[in-house]
Amino acid sequence: MPSDARYAHPEAIVETAWLAEHLADPKLRIFDCTTYLLYETGTGRPYRIGSGRPDYEAAHIPGSAFLDLQGELSDTTSPFNFTMPAPEVLAARFAARGLGEGHRVVLYARKNMQWATRVWWMLRAIGFDDAAVLNGGFDKWAAEGRAVEAGTRSYPAARLTARPRPGLFVGKDEMKAAIGDAATCTINALAPDLHSGENPRYGRPGRIPGSVNVPVASLVDPVSMTFRAPHEVAAIFAAVGAEPAKRKLLYCGGGIAATLDAFLLHQLGHTDLAVYDASMNEWARDEALPIETG
Image 1 (cartoon, helix red, strand yellow):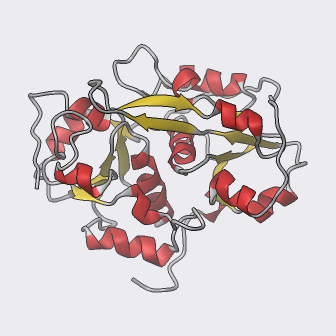
Image 2: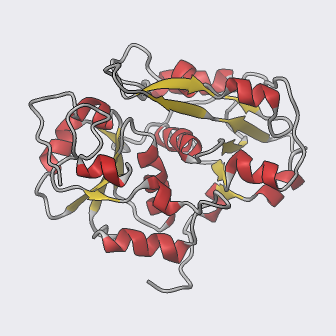
């Protein structure tokens, strides 16, 4: 891969210095999207969901509001965590939080940018394109000694009309149909021990047959918490056969980590991308679905 590779949509990645200079922009809407997965054993579930709200209230980027991904931006009637709501429902919930037409939106998270990319991918799926992910998230912001504030913030309700883009999320039927299809590259964003089946966190150990592994952690610098350089990311995907001409189906445990992989493939100019929303939360539980290990 050429060392001069560039991201195709740089407007969707915001740096901390830029954000610090634009905090007073009245059209800017900044949201902390942090959620925590608290891993468990012996409970029959892969993890508990921990809200990032307490950490947000203790310290956040000045002016930013909080989005509760599982509590308000997911279909809580679904048997699976983090299920995408109907587009019109999701648009109304974003609008109630002050995200709407004419706004420039910046999304950030703590510890892992996948929470911000999940919200970004959801916004893209309902047709809102003026959103960006803060590179390095709150961790980089704080490490640089930038200003923070405590308490809570909110924005006035806005107007947002859903203009759905079909196909950015898929279900188990599409995933099953793609098995063995040479024109499709199915990518697992989970850690290698989950991909191989060594770790049975989601129930039946293993992966969707034929899928390749691009762990979300491999795409982020572990020190700065920022996205790796474009040429590095391009090389990682090329090494597993994720060619631009192929359709890419991305999955993980619950459709969160997969969005960071999808976000960076989008940045590299790949266009035929979809995230399996329920991912291994569904696949591993369904004995009728094939699985492989090793």
